[in-house]
Image 1 (cartoon, helix red, strand yellow):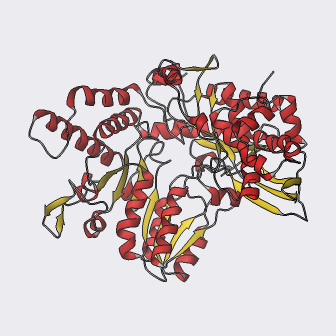
Image 2 (cartoon, one colour; image 1 turned 45 degrees about the vertical axis):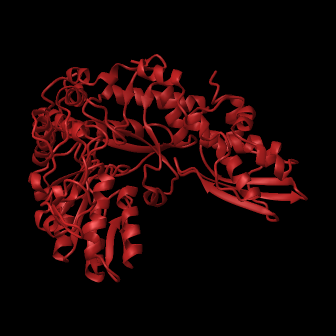
Image 3 (spheres, helix red, strand yellow; image 1 turned 90 degrees about the vertical axis):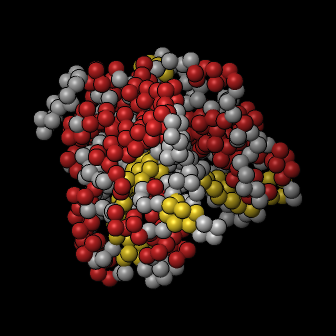
Length: 419
Length: 146
């Protein structure tokens, strides 16, 4: 099952080998082998990640930053090693790499620190119609609190943003922050981050990028992209739940007030006031997710072992194949860009006459796990004129066979509905 | 034969009864299933404290649309107090199947909006949560599944 791609960047190991690394793929549902194509919701975990977490609790469990004993040194090494691994993956300095719970918390951290100090009455926070709720609701709340205005860049029929519209809004409005997703979790659109960031910076705005769907499948370098903040989560990139990452440009992080107050984030505590530890500790109050950091380090090592260029090529190839097969189904509408090179490895679709929830239920009968619903992107659903879509989203262990099984399941769903 | 998507349910899904608007109505309510964004609304005409007529409107999956259609005739003639007593078991009985936890809210949405219209309640009908609780046997099954 060796995969070669249009770019010739093949995965260094066979898909059979890679699949053997994911224990959950042995599970059967309704007597059938599992087809998991819901990685946009959360990815499955390779054994290396599961073992890293297990080993931490068996061999190294201790709190970080506190004790002198050997276990604490182990825990500290695993936690900070996780940070270093993640920082290297995205081209950041570890001091600019903050561990949080998930991408949502990463974005909210910026809302409660940088944004509260820099966005005020009359200012504009500019987002897009293709944002996940995690990059919508925090800005609604901020704008309400600060008397600022939330504005949206529209999504065109091709699933892309219009950079002329961006320029026009930057010229006309007092935009303080441009917050947008790197990869749309519904449309599969890969946004031109560097281009958007350059234009936003020229207008004096700060740039926050939601990388939750991008880091698992694209080579990402936050410096080359020009992001001031870049948020993502561990569990969509083969890592555990409960740990996410906020990259922040060092000058910004140093000037920002703390997020949560408590242990680990202080330099010294007086009776009435305190001073803060330097970043990233300033933003990491309380005992952090240590086992999860160890697990995330293992996930990063796993991805690096495959090579992010090869992962991208694999995702692109599967996304293109799924797009082609799903588009050919009678009554199918697929969303997002038509050009596979502009797409990430996921496809949202609807089939006329069958609600996405029913599609997901009937796919499950065939042991095919897909997502159905609004994908936490209700403004985009309204733009697309649908209440919900079904979505297949791929990871490193998925194959063309998985796409074929999905299509077979959808055909059997059509038969159930007499279509 | 598929228990969930059998002819009875698909027929109600494809040709839902009592769907549309009631220009003259005494109560109405609309809500969404937050899990999927499906919207369902209801118009109700009362005679005294009894439901004389009702119409659903909105869009949703086969289960939510069919349930609305199936319970619509059952609800006519019931008093407000009787409708307040209805819960998950009523919906399961009407459908002739125990809805799984993942589909329960699809089935309960129509009853929820009717209770919302008549009683002003915003909670899900009773039983919506129970089905999500994991029994010890269920937990053991999940642990040993692979």
